[in-house]
Image 1 (tube, rainbow, N blue to C red):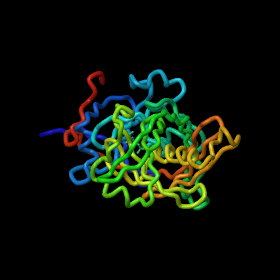
Image 2 (cartoon, rainbow, N blue to C red):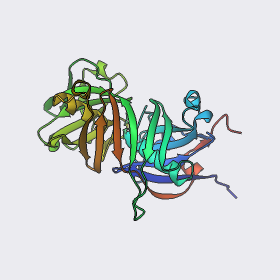
Image 3 (cartoon, rainbow, N blue to C red):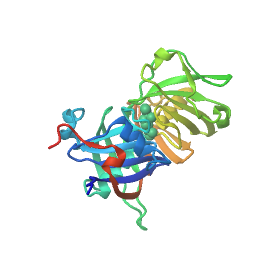
Image 4 (cartoon, rainbow, N blue to C red):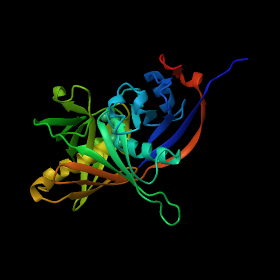
Length: 301
Ligand SMILES: N[C@@H](CCC[C@H](N)C(=O)O)C(=O)O
């Protein structure tokens, strides 16, 4: 008889940026790029834009130093198996998982990520039991100098280089359809501005301090939302609109519509960016480790 190890998983999304969640509290699993790609495959797998592995910070070499501040580490992978520093929608869904698993309660919690510790707040559920949103302090945006150009087919636009822990190129366009089908990654130049690749956002105005975006994510293709991308867009829009909170001396808030919903993003005069949006767990189950090619970690006992 063949015995197959079973691995628990959940599926969740934040504004339809969807994730397979793998609880691996003690860091016992080896999640290879091929295993991640298999999990995220929308025809042969569970289907997702990325994987959130939930590991105790103390049990992960990249997070051990953050363990005194944040008990849990979000080990985020893009759907092609590549590693990214940060995922804004992912961190809200990660918080929701911790709440559902009884590992966190409504209110404040800290989550370790490769971009550092992020502080989140899970709002109280509504009177009808409707889950409250999750707010995350996303850190400060870095705005590297230098001209960047985004190209799709024959068309090009100037872009703003914004780093939210991960790299973004933000282009304001006349129409979101200008981005084309986004089956392939837009061109971004100079390549030297993004040595590790880039997420590209196309943005239109919807009204005062209200924009909408489409995004092509590094490692995942076009997705229905990108939390770090929405934050990058908010900061780029505020600079374009002459609404830098550091100059105005008060916070500035934008509504950012994404194909999968709506995020509300604020920047404080000290540069801290805060994002609020939904986080939903839609399913949970078990999978065969051998099907996914997930192995016990070499150091696991
Ligand atoms: N969807 C995420 C971003 C995920 C990482 C990104 N693809 C990268 O490689 O930087 C978000 O919500 O921020």
